[in-house]
Length: 127
Image 1 (cartoon, rainbow, N blue to C red):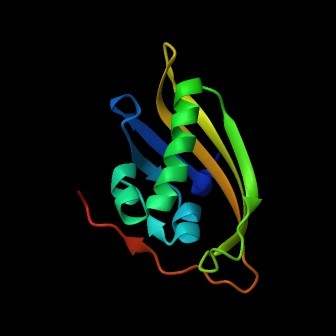
Image 2 (spheres, rainbow, N blue to C red):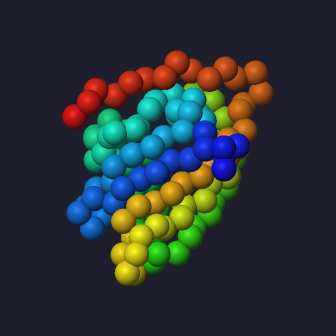
């Protein structure tokens, strides 16, 4: 597991899915996103970047509600030239017991853009 821990995000489901808390965020995510979400709620991130929040919440809600793993991959296009990566593969895994998903385990592999340096990490203020 040590080889892919930097690619892991552990998310706690808050109040049945009303919000999500980023508990663990591996450094591959921090470098790719140029921000460290650890210790923050999805609602706070949605307030800063509504487009990210809408797509992310939809995916989290789907995995939580169905309790089914979900995988996606894709190219990051010209519409996001600021992105440090050009391709990703992600799997969302529901975790919990008694048919209740209380955490999501997300594992992503990023392919950096050719010649792209990772940007400095932005630290969100603590709640």
